[in-house]
Length: 345
Image (cartoon, one colour):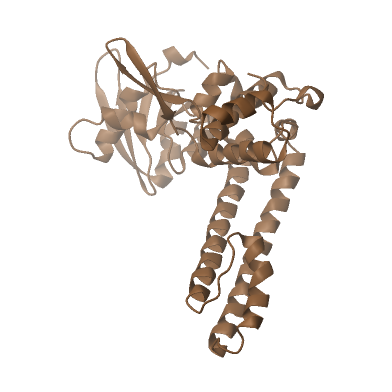
């Protein structure tokens, strides 16, 4: 295939059924627009010379990226938020395709690497687990709130609630209506089934991590378990596209936002850009290190002058940098030299 700079650029706005194409001939300036049904898209690209096909990184984009690459084209997925400023006047599918074509030629916009089927399958398991966790939390919170109306106060946390709820129901058996007691027990059965489904997904993620070298290497880092390792490895498709650990941490939204004018720059809170799910897992890992491991001098000194959550974010930043170093070197983390405040940068 020719070099990227020599390939003609095609902007494609994808949808469920109707796709919009925008092409500009760089030599003649002629503009070609086409509206294609879903079953005609592949035929359109099979009959064309290799091109750089730009797509917004939205639902279905990675699938089409793999399809186009399999047929000799180069797929470039663009962040949707960075394409939006190039939409001129009213938003239509044709305007979107034109904006994608323009954004694809901006050197400052970083493309989203096309994910493999295995990576998407791993992230799909995480999304299913996250949804089930949300449903379980809703069920337990509803139980806690409903029983509070009958004078039964239950502790926070899933495991603490399950330990206390049956003894508390037994104590209040005389004053609690039987219809409420029966309904609460049925609710506990539903919560138990949700937990079984969550445990099944956890086992699948653990089995998936055992087959992937990157995920195995990540689990050698303190604060990284199967969940964080699988999510990070599947999200960071091309780790070598990041020049440094700081750039990788910035991509995950763990570096400070900056605002400035007149040569004066102020540091604000973390930017929270990037994938919020992976960032949350890194925060949980950092919180576990501070709570359960021996605190280093760096962590202790930081806790004396900064709020707890700020220290957690700082340590999560170090974990992200360490993950970048481990993945780029392809070597396991040296546990013997580990210090919570001296993770690799």
